[in-house]
Image 1: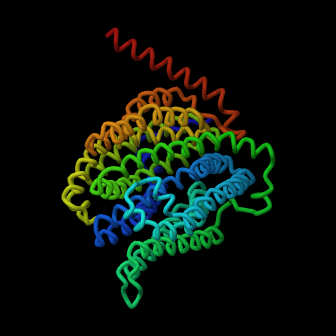
Image 2: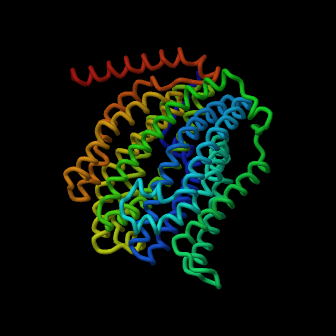
Image 3: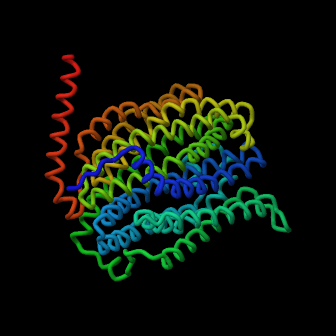
Length: 480
């Protein structure tokens, strides 16, 4: 078992090498959503609310496939550390099959019955009618999205992070250009409004996927994807894959259902609140762009260290990430909060929605930082091979605390919107207390590779020695 001294400077250098391109890619993806919402904003607050409700359907779709994507990242990172080409190929093949099924189900439902999907989230008939053309067109992009995510994760896990960034730049340019032409009817094109934004989203998704495949085939890497190995997976691997992925899938799907219930509550507030929530989601996505890059980088680093048998390094990287990532989140949200008038003004919001947005950002400054800390610890558990603990804790707290509190506040007591919004985050502090202790225990380190498994007994002894030394130091400080 290898242990290297991990200083903050070396940690930050390694994180930025992987995180910065990923953060920029996430930022560009968020900017694409921001472009849709801002350009639609010129058509009025109602159009912003309609696109915001549509984005909640996309969020549910994201939750349903993200469990497989998260499981794939776990295996990709650890097999990359062990340089196990067959394991990576099998992971890619199995994940592709599952994610394709999810994409197809959502695509067919969105294209054939968009009113049904929108009616789940809001009772405002005019919002449903305005949003239906958007979600019907975007439905065609869902199968493309899942494959693009899988290819992008594979390239990130094998430390090829620049190509996905370039693809995001190109797709954003296509999205912006088509939005400008089709939303407003420029250069002789029909004025399509909300539907024009959806066409831009679909076209940018096609461009993104095509470019990713080109880079995947052209880039040089010691790990190559081979069709025979991708779809010739063994029963033993399939069982191991599902044992790790199903808890993550359950986590993401149940989390998505919980968020759907919360969004239903929001969808039954007044139209200014719905529009403010749509603008807030874009700002929240902007924050996630930075944090998501750090989270992906931490997952790759921790998984690689666990897979290669360097378990103390993975443990120390997790602890540093759990401090650093929330600090970044607090800084980014703080800047957005200070500039709230200028940023929220881009969305064409009315005075009431602008006030809502300002106070939502202040609430998020505290609870969003705590949520970031919880998220990075849970992602670290998954990268380390533990997929159950975080699932039980997150889903349990969501459905016993946050969801009931938000539903009662919004649908039973009919409290003011900002009070309802604050109840969304009521479970985060409890999760923080529990996860902090579990992170320190190191019980989340569960390798799936032979190298990691061989190093596990020595790692456990290292943890016991570390705790004994820490205990003696605390007792010495107390007696002094």
